[in-house]
Image 1 (cartoon, rainbow, N blue to C red):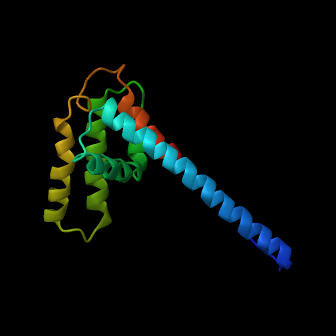
Image 2 (tube, helix red, strand yellow):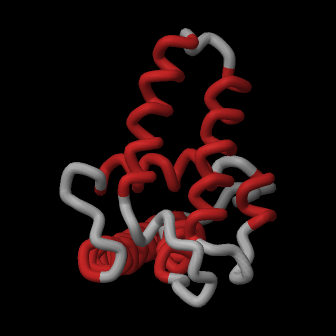
Length: 141
């Protein structure tokens, strides 16, 4: 918000209240969306509780890479998306600088454990649950 002059007390109170209301509304939306994501991961992609934090952190890292975001496509299989995601994560980690290579390798080993999931390595293009999760995280979280 750009303020070019001072506002009166009521205007500041109004801004504060609307900001707080927006925060509460956003929190409700995030909570609803995370529950939906959790259910898709558990019921349709069959992600174990052990892999859930790994896949979420992988998604967040990959979504911070414009190349990954720009290549998301419904014509890609889950396996293709996962491979692109892992490549994007490695590129992001290596481009940050200051992260020791051993730590990057350890992180990538954890992320590569997602390759043990049959749904994520499916070559069936019609199976779009993984893409739906990615888009929900990107657009709603």
